[in-house]
Amino acid sequence: MSLEDQSDELITSRRNPLVRKLRSLSTRAGRDEHGVVLLEGTHQLQELQNRVWRDSVPLDVVATPAWLQTHAGLIRTLPGSVRVQRISAEALQAGLTTVQPDGVACLLPLSCLPSTVAAPDFVLALDRIQDPGNLGTLLRTARAADIQQVWCASGADPLAPKVVRSSAGAILSLPVERFGPDPAEG
Image 1 (spheres, helix red, strand yellow):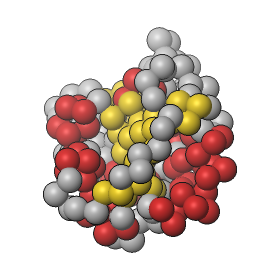
Image 2 (cartoon, one colour):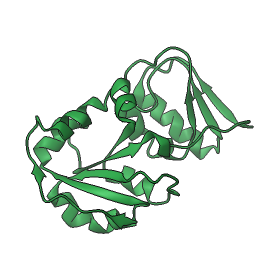
Image 3 (cartoon, helix red, strand yellow):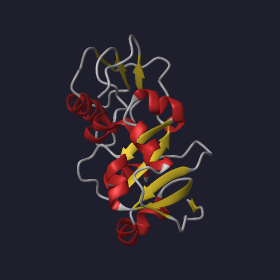
Image 4 (cartoon, one colour):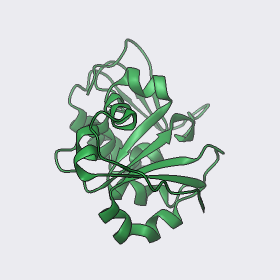
């Protein structure tokens, strides 16, 4: 990993463009517009440590000074190059969906998510799973069961923040293909 220059600027305003961008990532339209998925919390960053980085796009991390002080080692172990932006706890909370964020979020390029498998032997097909927490749990279980790919028809968006959090990192290693009508926001 190469750590690109950490910005000395501390974002404190809830109206800052980065805070607005973070907020927009709670919707599918925002994720599609910016080409990133939001990973909230230390655990999600820990899941990235074991990933093979196949993309030259730098990883953007936003973190509070307190989090950076206690987790500098984690930042150094992330794959690829990392850009760090310091942000106040209040501004970070305004940008995330987590009620009490632990001080860090990562903007992962959509291109870094697992590619779909051409001819998978073991697939989980899901339709009309409305609850984001349930979908995340199913993804976590699918990873544990060595499912090769998940197909999601209508229902909760597999990249919605609550789904990503409840998947406990499964979304980072399990190919998920969306099809059918636009999923309900979750």
